[in-house]
Length: 236
Image (tube, rainbow, N blue to C red; front, side, top):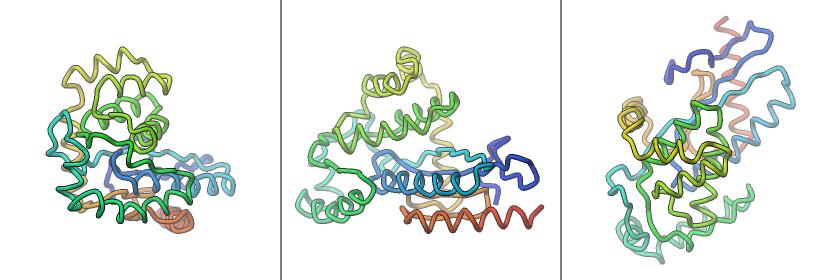
């Protein structure tokens, strides 16, 4: 299934250095996406150790969990009231998330989050960084900024700072975010993945062959990758 056309990043079973394209649909305010990223990293590291000739390429795609939030975001307590019925209920739900996070060295600090952000600008930054080969680091820094440090990742100044911390041009990011660059593209990509049936994140697609929904364990992801590789070989 040709879901995300990314020229030059498809699975080639006949080339000397095979390419495995990994498409990840996620949102940076999704705790399971953070967990899923860590589990994917483990699966890919294990795969790279077993198949050193495999060229692994991870591509990030936007999915806004709360696309209707105002650009400035909303008060976190009010958001929890609306979504879960209040902080107490949210704490019960987050207990499971914390337990899962502890297995991949993520000490979630939900109490540090003061605002629930609109993530359109964060996805614009990821797309901008991806065009420069730095998306994975930026995505990780966004997750850590939000879930561990409680930073306001809906604020363009904070986003520019995070980009700078990742070695990107802070002022160039400020200028990009101050413009409309990427806005229509991110919204169109978000609509596209929903039209394709993605209604929750994280969502992984390996070599355009095998899709996996949810923050599955590394072994599950690795099995899915193995199936995608086998399918690619058969197709050739």
